[in-house]
Length: 441
Image (cartoon, rainbow, N blue to C red; front, top):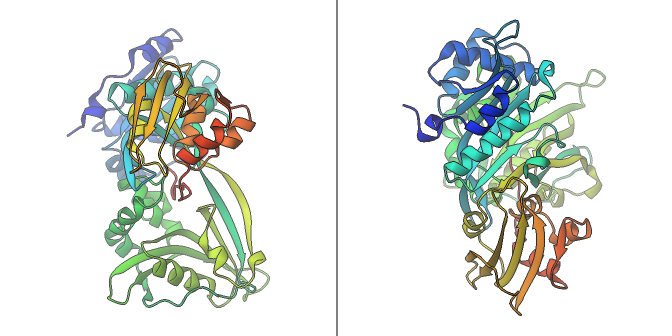
């Protein structure tokens, strides 16, 4: 049975815009296997991925049953049944500061065939997604991006960064705490069936994490379709506390060095820990593997604690740090009132938005308990309030508490309407826990 968000009609404005170009924007019926197979092949082509096998298409068909899938078709193309553009979306819970969550519109699989560039297809699809989310009352949109130059024009901004780490394990002697639990090997199938409750238990601890399951979950273990060959090289361990309760797990791969058998590389694919004990136990196990000289870990937080748990600070290096989760506020009042704030205060926010969704002037009033109200405000700036003017992009960057209002002001992205307001806004919005998202979607 389809959900309301899947049944909501395609956005008429974008449909009419593309119809003027001789193109058709439409939904894919989640029960139409033949059409979805063509859509999945077009998506794979868009990301330069191999052509999906029949087995992979069958597994993905089941995985897309809970998504809203759209495409653009060109009746004059050599294969008119194959879409020339794709996008997929669904509502998911996004963690915000204060161990709370807000419903966000997750946008994924955005592709446009190189044969159909400069026709306004991406703009039409993304604006359709935003108008659909707004119509459904979803206050925030989010996506992970393969290209960082596309989405700013639609009001998105990077709100959670990620880091790829590289650790010289020959120098990184463990100096962290001793643990009271145990690490043990488990099968990938075991984690697929039993591991998701650990992830969900941890999710509210970190702003930027999202609720996920289905295809996104099994993909972590290489147990779907064409990833199964890669899964042969993956190993998994679970950490159980002293009482035998599972508190975390890690999935990793070890690659042999062609030059030196004692210099393998261990690549951490995914690691989650519900307790500090589990975190220390898993990292120590990974760092102390025999015949391994280097450990790599991608898509990790920028403030990874393991840096402080080894003897040589310089044995841990940043291989790459980049933007990862981009957010876009649609309903300013609902979004701001959904999160917690670290200190009381009042702030006038004058928000500009060329697309119109979030254009407003509000007074954000944070109570001593960290809850807030955000009401439309037309009067003079109160004497006790900070005041800034900013775009929806800047507000979306600030939203999860990991981007500095002072930095955005220095960069010209925020305008102080009252002196020293940037510092006050920073104190209001900053999260004590750095935002981070541990997956692609």
